[in-house]
Image 1 (tube, rainbow, N blue to C red):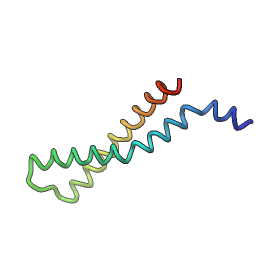
Image 2 (image 1 turned 180 degrees about the vertical axis):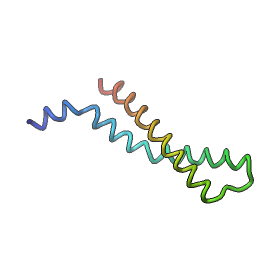
Image 3 (image 1 turned 120 degrees about the horizontal axis):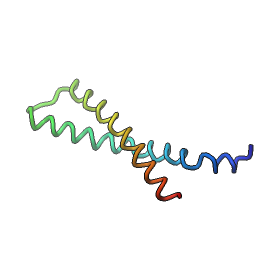
Image 4 (image 1 turned 90 degrees about the vertical axis):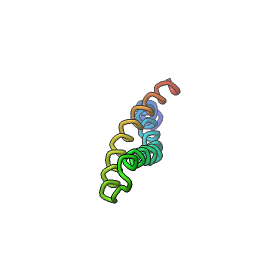
Length: 79
């Protein structure tokens, strides 16, 4: 198999994965900060255990958002 034909066959999935990874960390941080601020409004302080739990929730949400937005971007820009 030629490398060019491999690239053409997997062009879109490669870019979706690359863009998803690039988006994951800033999106996770942004969502986590929003979760923590929302929690601070209802109670004065947020414990470290609650912050860890909120970070897990933010990671799950950011994985979904990153994959969806990178797929939409790649399908619109490259096709």
